[in-house]
Image 1 (cartoon, rainbow, N blue to C red):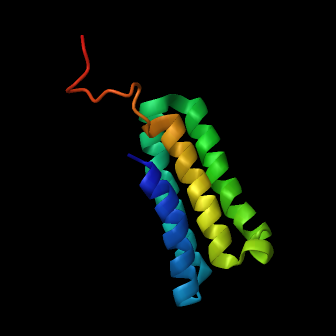
Image 2 (cartoon, rainbow, N blue to C red; image 1 turned 60 degrees about the horizontal axis):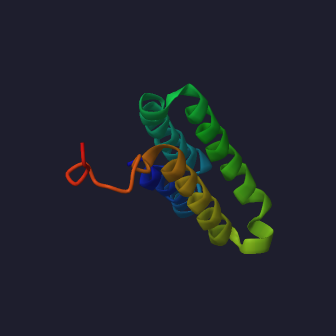
Image 3 (cartoon, rainbow, N blue to C red; image 1 turned 180 degrees about the vertical axis):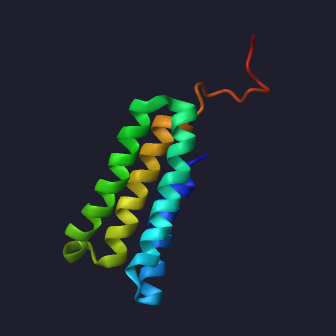
Length: 106
């Protein structure tokens, strides 16, 4: 499951930058989180979906700055974190069928 890391790293990166006042520390969290996810996305879903999700992650980060005036800083980060996490779930993490492997019929 990558969606918790994808969305959580956006939240944690912002929290680190806010708490320390050092934006590059938040950026380290973002880069580490996105990099970790990208490696797993590449193995599980291929280059096209990985590229789409990395672009969404970076665009979400940028979007959070644009919509912060409307939603507030934490509101905007929560919104894009949910968006990125949902996309990661849909494109990579979602099971292929509704059945768990133990209950699947051969």
